[in-house]
Image (cartoon, rainbow over all chains, first blue to last red):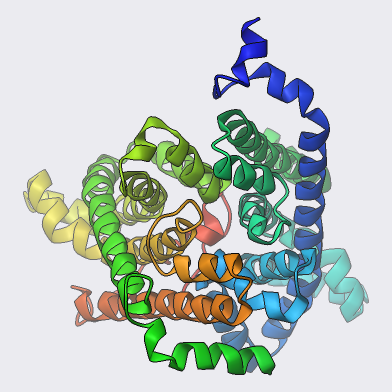
Length: 226
Length: 246
């Protein structure tokens, strides 16, 4: 009985809400996940070449780092609003905004990771006849992974949280439910969507940590030895 | 080009700047919120961070608070506070949300700055017979200054951004120009509001960068190594490389 009434009495925690709106919640979560995944994936694809360019030419490094810092300073609502006339009302507005934010952290962390590769490792690889590409993907990238993954985790968690702001144009995943709930003062909807959003961020963080462990087995061995 | 021109026209129209919905009024609300919330956050976070950093305790807490701050969506907290019993108390939900999100960067940076102040210098000062109070005031705080300022600057930009979002649940500030534009499906107004907000955020960032340089107590000393800046967006996860800002 209590469950039935919680929708009417507008309680924060309401099992009936979760039961009756499970489809809506699933759809919102799926939208949230794909917007986040698309943003982080594109962010990584753009950040990697940028970091390589910045490492190769010092002249490029300054503007690239400065530009990404400036982009990061722009508040999310303003960022999405500025992109609105470019893409119209579409998921591209949200994804592009999130990609631009992700560059700040990803470019810096990839550069820091590559810079941390010991010169001896590079020399050894060159001595073994590694070309530039094989050196990058076979030696430097694996050794830069811890820094890269740390950046990726931070970016992913921030992206999950920032996606909610996309609700302003209807592409905010769980943010859409928060936005609707705000307008109709629907407490259960706002709380459920907020909790799901935080849970999503935590799950993504833990999953990426797992991926990092799998990709860098040598780090674990070293930790055990120490 | 059309929208840019129209947004410019919107900004150039005098009537959009006056009145309760005008730019000047919204800007003053935004600045008031930013100033009050930044002051409260510093008053709360700085003493805690300095004492913990001095004692070298609570590092895990400082880092975890920052990580939690990033995982919790600002928008969700704003709406949750609005729907809570606090929601009927005017500006308070907004102020509380702004303070909550400004505390982590101040706390983490000040903690790291103080706890990682050059150990040799600290030991030397202790050997000279400085008391804890003297040590904090004369050695650790000046050494930690650049990082403390980085934290305050990050918090200030964060507050400007969050205050913008506060317009969604009906708070005051420049964000209202954007949300009103959305309601009226007036894209030029949305873009004009966004330009104003972005300009304010960049201005605040710039002012704090300058303040950090001008006020640095160590800036005339030679051989001073400023500690690597610890900027929350990039590096709060444990063991991630420290992000150097300029």
